Length: 77
Image 1 (tube, rainbow, N blue to C red):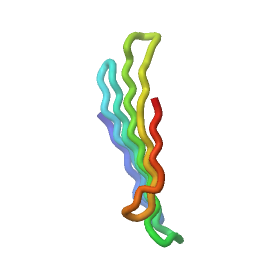
Image 2: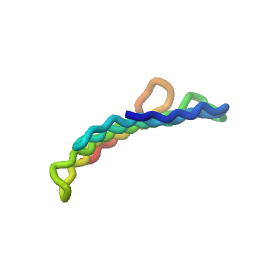
Image 3: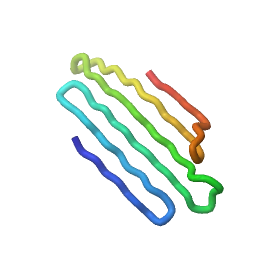
């Protein structure tokens, strides 16, 4: 497990990764609040699962929003 976070005067961003020998779970975010009406944010969650050394399943989602509202949601497989 490892994590990284940056807190700046106009935004924050970071990531968190959990893994073992076959699975990796990653979460990341960005939030900015300078020169905007409401805080704009983005969050990403992904899962990598290694079935063998040649084949990996990847799935995840990406959320975009402003303030308390979610503007856009995307998934990937």
